[in-house]
Length: 147
Image (cartoon, rainbow, N blue to C red; front, side):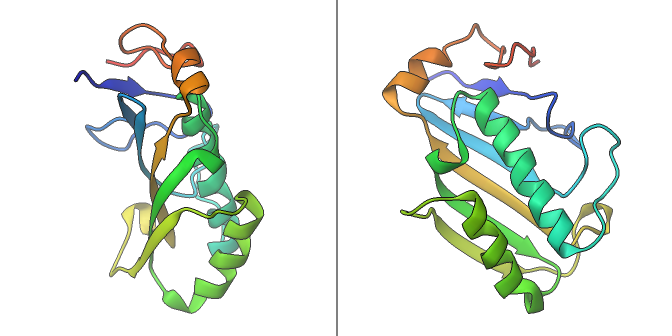
């Protein structure tokens, strides 16, 4: 099975040698997103603002793949401080409809750019979305070219 890089100009560029997302068949693996503003590269201020920006960034990559946040079946949340767990749950509930994705949440010692939260996900495209997202090799649904 081949894999296709997914990119979106509406999400921050990767901070290293990885793709914003990778599609393999109908499954899309979304790289971890920080609360970075894609236009400025600046980290949002505070865990609430960062969490909202993370979900906006994940949405942009999911849409570039032909999906939506509600197509996500699994999330992994990395937090610098689990004291914000309830607030993150509240914010997440505003971005998803039941059935919610499966999820694991971990407290970590540090995140890139001193971020307070990072979230990665796995989504499965519906048959219609999978066909619509069938752009050429290395090209995402929003027309951006991958490597």
